[in-house]
Image 1 (cartoon, helix red, strand yellow):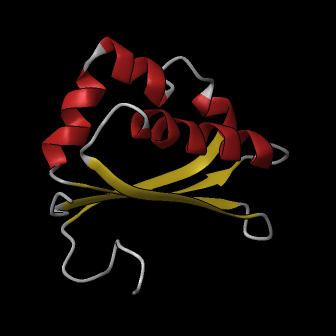
Image 2: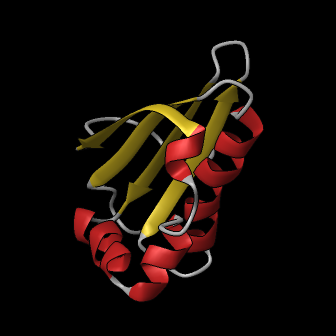
Image 3: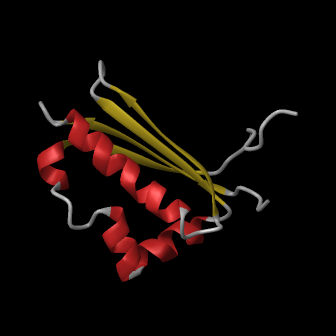
Length: 108
């Protein structure tokens, strides 16, 4: 297994009536990238309907794995560059993080 050196996290809230659309557009990019990149080590998309919020975290072998992929035409398309994000997302905050502890493998 590659060593995790980079984690991307985003916290998004939906505009009124757009929660399901936010869930759809938030979970698609990492799901698509998971099929294409060995450097995506783990990811989770979590939704809290009561708080109208979706959180995405994805851990990579290195930051360049994500950003190099996003620079390609395929990466732009998989990321949802053509989605109607402005009509769905009320707020969006992202974090570029360096993992300092954690566990990606199941307990034995």
